Amino acid sequence: MYKSRISGLGHFLPPSSVSNQDLCMLMDTSDEWIQERTGIKSRRWVDSNNITSSSQMGYQASLKAIENSGINKSDIDHILFATISPDHYFPGNGVLVQDLLGLDTIGATDIRNACSGFIYALSVANAYVQTGQYENILVIGSELQSPVLDKTTNGRDLSVIFGDGAGAAIISRSNNTSEIFSTHLHSEGKNALELSMKGPSAIHWVDKLERNQISPENFAPQMNGTLVFKNAIVRFEQVINEALNKNKMSSRDIGCLIPHQANLRISQFVQKKLGLRDNQVFNNIQKYGNTTGASIPIALSEAVEQGHVKRGDIVCLAAFGAGFTWGSALLRY
Ligand code: COA
Image: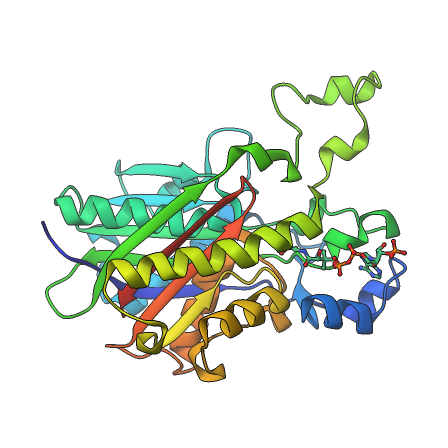
């Protein structure tokens, strides 16, 4: 078995920042409510006059990750793209980035595990590198969510939370002390529709909407916020402890916890339960909102850029989201 590590990171955020005050012009909400319940002050939403795509944002993040890893892009031998907001119904975004990077005929895989998507993709990349099948894998998490959000008062519980952005990592064979120790994945399909967007899909198709056979809500995200919150706080703690126990570590060994940026209150609750100090947890949801599959690679990339995570630090990544799915990864950066 080989060891794998994160050799480079990059992220891309659309320039257009939307504050809580801006949202008050669109719906009945307030800066106070949003900050108190979610911790979010602003989010990035792509400019509707200058719309981009999740593959384009993923491509921009990938260029930075490749540069930071020190490899040549031709060294990449596989792509894993995690998104729930792909450019097309099919094909997936992986092949679009493969083409944008001009990477000949290497394989590309798409992963649709929402907020846990990056951890799931990292887990697959880790296994590929450990078995020797590939040496340098590009793992992307990218989401363009703002166009499908219901920005009226009707959709305010969801639309104030979500943002757009992309992050990417290069997972390489490791010849030094940097190492992904383990990954841990879980799901609970009985809650599949508690956080979901049903259409457009093969059974929720546009003509059914036009013939009034299904309602427009099927084409917007729906969330049982209280149930998501209650499950998230339990599963985050469980899956982080699972990673620590597997590697005979305790929460004191964590140099930096990067939780999926779902809601600041969830991160703070988990921090408290694990007894972590403020400087052991990195949050940037205040600026970017919840960017679903992109939130962990954006946060990790930013934590490294800002010096919160350095080479040799023990880092724990953890996510919970639609599916329900959840997972963690423990690594030495
Ligand atoms: N602005 C103002 N008021 C709002 C609002 C908004 N954006 N969204 C909802 N409200 C109102 C509700 O209509 C409700 O009003 P009512 O009491 O008159 O019926 C009230 O605020 C409380 O709503 P509730 O849903 O109970 O609030 P909450 O404290 O549970 O917070 C969430 C709502 C969504 C912030 C919270 O449930 C949450 O964070 N859930 C997890 C979300 C998450 O992490 N999702 C991503 C998973 S990866």
